[in-house]
Image 1 (cartoon, protein in one colour):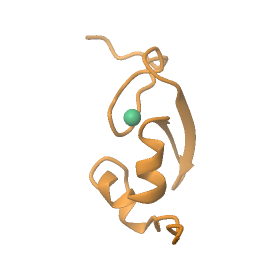
Image 2 (cartoon, helix red, strand yellow; image 1 turned 60 degrees about the vertical axis):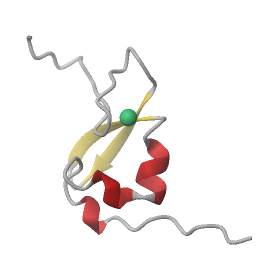
Image 3 (cartoon, helix red, strand yellow; image 1 turned 30 degrees about the vertical axis):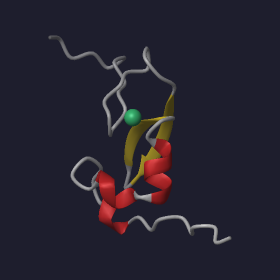
Length: 67
Ligand SMILES: [Zn+2]
């Protein structure tokens, strides 16, 4: 398989931009892409991205709304 710069993939589930909308992130000087399905994980449970996203352990989850 050839490596193409145009082949953008979600950092978590690795879906490509052809399969799902990808959102562009900047973090620690890196440019990253995450798909709309994985964005809630980044917001609410960033610890699940440890190992996939560098320094994910430093991201604080968004505050949960309490009802
Ligand atoms: Zn994804």
